[in-house]
Image (cartoon, rainbow over all chains, first blue to last red):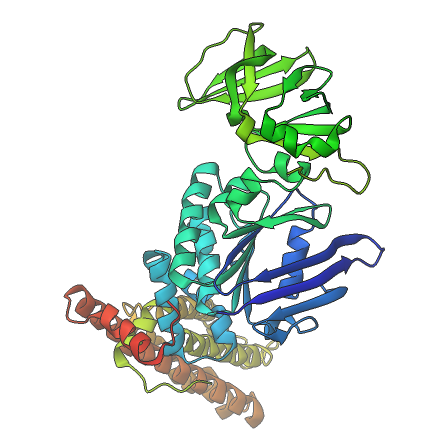
Length: 359
Length: 175
């Protein structure tokens, strides 16, 4: 399986709109890369540029050591799975899966072997004589994947393949994609806006916003060490709570509360005395008992944990996730604190500064 | 195109997933040729000429059934269904026999030109030949598929083994 290198790639549309800025990424052999970000962040455009469906304005794309920047899609030896499956309705599942090989005029027997092998991997053997409309969404998506597998491409590209499926099916398909990657050990690039998919599937995640890469790293890195406020709030569910404030006299002072810093935090923030910064804390890192007063507005018991929504200073909405089963009444005030080891500090986002993490 | 030595088991297994398009298309060609025949014939029918009799009415009705049945046959052949094999042969043979009815009587009574006769005779003959050939091909392939499926069900053929053999040897399959 080959490596994919994207070097300083820009995408500028005819009207001058720039969708992707200076995208750099080296995808290793057999690696599963997930591009994640909100709608319109340029992740699908990047994938389509790799596929050859969008022209690369500037930069270089290298697949398996070969410069593919200006190569037509058919010569790149890649397979793409789309959100809407893109199956031929008048063909059977077998014919759909065999179609690309039939076009290449492959031997019928070779085609048969490849289709049957893919059908076995994807558990589609009993569906081969059916038409796509007779299958469920998950099965159709498996057929779309099967069509990619039979081609034995250098790189698999997935463009939000699970977005059309319901939550339950999405979960099971996610596991199937994970298993598929293990079985094939193929180089895969996967686009999604669903952070759960990104965190569970990826070897590395590329988090994008407004056409720019915000952070590239292992899922745990993005979760535990977000590079800036965007990544911090995008990764994690519910999102990280962010508080604007100033570092003064060994305390983080916001309009709503004052939070004493420990020695390690003071050391980290020694260059920011008197400056505006952002304190971030994940809902699951908020503990009961502490210097901050929270006015409870809503209490959601989820069985394994409890989500408590509340306000600090009557303004700032905060979400806390407690591991225990808690019952709070609306209007009740509770004391909360932040786990000092798991509290994040960021520069205040201004202009070109996305609010980089202070470490 | 990649050459392959050929595995008879896999060649039969492919038939379970691919329709008999060759046989079905042959039947449809027979149908199209039948259309050429009756279009040629009806272009010769004029008020008060030789063909302006009850026979044409009968021929029109027969042609309607012919179109319907041959289309049905093509679908059956496509799906390896040989239940109407004998009926298919009869319809094919009837096409050939029809040469000796309206076209031949027309030329004998000098109601049509030799060119028109030849058009009708050739299209009818070719139509009949195509339908008979399609039926025979359909019958042979339907039996092959049925026999293969029966062997699979009885466990006489280990399909998985056949499919895996190539993987081990040629590495053609990526999984």
